Length: 348
Ligand code: KG4
Ligand code: ZN
Image (tube, rainbow, N blue to C red; front, side, top):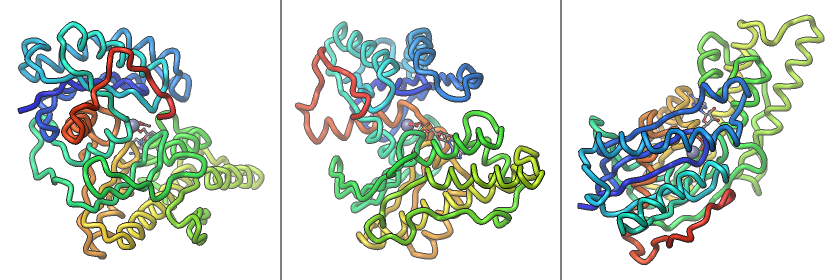
């Protein structure tokens, strides 16, 4: 049995977890900074790294306690996200992990945050009920988060082929920017989802980006869609309609959310059918979106494709996924341990 303490501080969540054999978390502690960043309307990097410094010790202690681990020496390795992310935020996790590895003599396992999101699909939270699948390769994975939109074909553990990605904004970024246009606050994803519940998704016709161009079959683009929403709000204003009025904002939010869900699901399914995927997984913060989840379930069921989307707590940033990714990477390559000179890579 391999017990890994994982640490994640790439953005605005300070997180630690103890994960057994890459499949079962014994603890999953997340201290979110959302309230702190709300007044800036987005993540303020300097504030984020300072808050990580304040929170990390407590978060790690809680993760160890909840997992019944009396001391780090009872573990097998320390895993940490070393990129991509905000450099100042990453540094806090990496330096803490180095300190623990140095003091305990345990191996230090550097993890790519995106590989972490991928492994969020195959690991169980503490006390999670219901079946958590194992990967059945080839798998097509869609990662949709605040910083990334990636379509990936996986032929085995650690064997990735990038099929496509966003040419401009990430899907989560688009949710955040459109929410700002509609005066819905930060973070934008949950705010848009809430507003959209009262809206009619067919009220406004928004463009479906990159749905027709063969060379961009598996790529995404959300910046034009955001501009289309901006133009729509200006047009409404010119007609004397306030786009931030709750009813109008609800219709815009619903129309926007529908287009994003449609584009993400269509391209993922197209990739899955083209490459003969035996499993489809969707992960990252935006995979918490209820409309995206429902649409993906409907379309995959129609196509006879097994779909898995993790529970909400594993969609947004967490350390359980980092512990899972670390385990499989370490299994593939036992020499892939970091030394105490490990650096952070904001654009890994
Ligand atoms: O994966 P994540 O927690 O952090 C990154 O690695 O970026 O993703 C955060 C993103 C934010 O843009 C947030 O607005 C979006 O995920 N998000 C959602 C929802 N919950 C979070 N987007 C749409 N619908 C949601 N329910
Ligand atoms: Zn993330």
